[in-house]
Length: 120
Image (tube, rainbow, N blue to C red; front, top):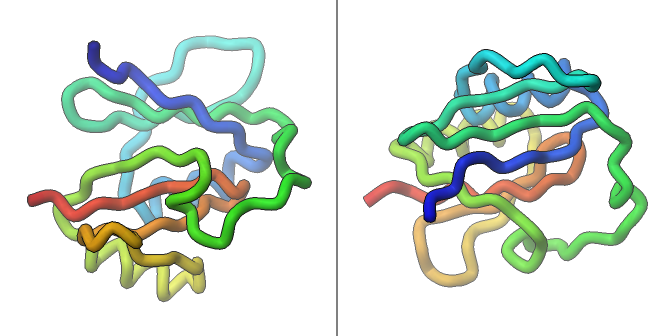
């Protein structure tokens, strides 16, 4: 099997786009016509991230301080330092991986946890 896409709930597409495009550096791809708004982003090997504009039913739930102990998606990146600099510049908090790997965890504006792992 191969992961086709990950779907995440977001409450504001403009704010989400600033994070996924401006911080993570992802590029939008064409989106199927659906009954709700959203954004799609392409990853390597045909994988995708789908953002869906919907109320987040988990917004009021408490989340662990370290994203590695929460539901999350992990993205392998070529230049983790560049993304770390963008996170710092945007004052987006993150934590280092507790496993010793070169990786960090942050949350998008809607609290979705993203793990960013340095590619070997």
